[in-house]
Image 1 (cartoon, one colour):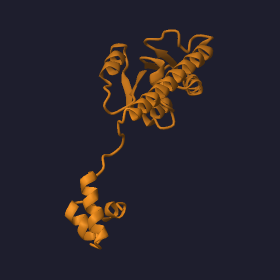
Image 2 (cartoon, rainbow, N blue to C red; image 1 turned 90 degrees about the vertical axis):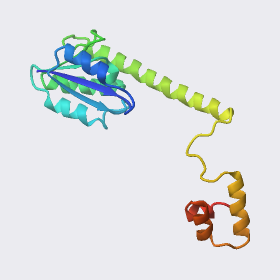
Image 3 (spheres, rainbow, N blue to C red; image 1 turned 30 degrees about the vertical axis):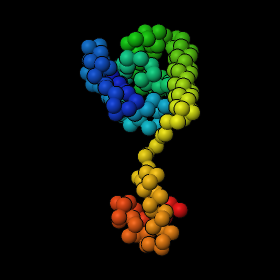
Length: 181
């Protein structure tokens, strides 16, 4: 049987392109999920697929980083596929094919490259976030009360008004009022 595996990293991303390509390539059953490719431990559909494989089956994916972004994870998956008597093929990377004698080396190098790409993405994201902070961009949830409202709360607290009453007046929790001095 020919199985397919498709993955995108976030709920906002679309699997349609991968699913269409896998079906056109002859996949009879496609496992798919919207999970990060950071590691393989939190990918239930991938694990379901790997335990489903039997001798003579083929596992297809469009590219290697859909399966694993870490070289060791890729080798473990290759071993699992091979131990099941199945084969792994990547549609856009024909050089990764478990029929080849050099597949472990190629898969490791490819996994290493995918990991380096992921690290570069993380670095660029962090650098972009830092530049945005330097420009004054604020991250996180916005404050529930603006500066003027905070001044009003502080003045009412200074007069001894109970925090519960102030919280109700501003439509916030008491703990929000307690944090304002």
